[in-house]
Image (cartoon, rainbow, N blue to C red; front, side):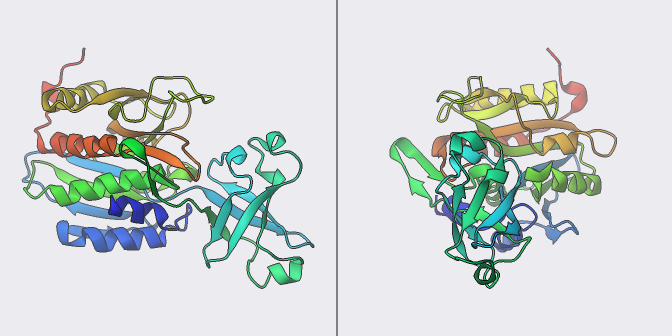
Length: 338
């Protein structure tokens, strides 16, 4: 999984995804019919169909959560705001890296237990003892992302930062490279920006593409290990087929077709429900007069942290499922709701 390792280690805080986009664009260019970047920064790659199918938009976001400097104290500490939803309890004593390469360590005023979901209590120490010295290295408004090396674990699992959603980007790249034959469908692969800030990139892309079907490739939280969420999602138990989350209602018939693909191809799957959060399907669903949407998920432990854990077999199954789904005919009139 060298490609997944490379993707997770790229710096790409929401709104500053350039390095991720450049890496992916170079990788996929030989395998698509068209590739372009829109004004917001989305990378959009197109594989033409044979004209018999649907216009399908597939989306995985390139951005990761991070922090932005809002104040520099007299003693050199940097005050920050969250860029995306930040799990403050997981940040204490963690390392961060700024876009210019400067490293820092996250500290907290008082007990970290008292800073839950309150990033205003956090600060970053970059090794400076005065405001003047700090300003030689970092400016107000600079962004930093989390440092979380990639590690292979036991039983075919891996841990790294930014699995959300570089694992989705990985899946789309592998699908692009795997699909050698022309399918019925016109496929628009969107590597979106600013998802962590409200799925902004996907909205802009969907308004341009005007898809008939939207698919989001993203992570979903593991519920098996203790957390503040309730559900049955479990790392290693199969690719996630989204059944619901607060951001969008998935199309029932298309979701049934995804499930049939899993059952026909004997792909392990689990019925994914999130009680908080959302994915790019929220924006695609409400674009251009309304779009049917479905979601494919990789169950992830410790999401939005420097040590998110996934299972390789879940990722491989997601690639197989997506390749199968977009290679089959999809006729809305033939879909039966049950």
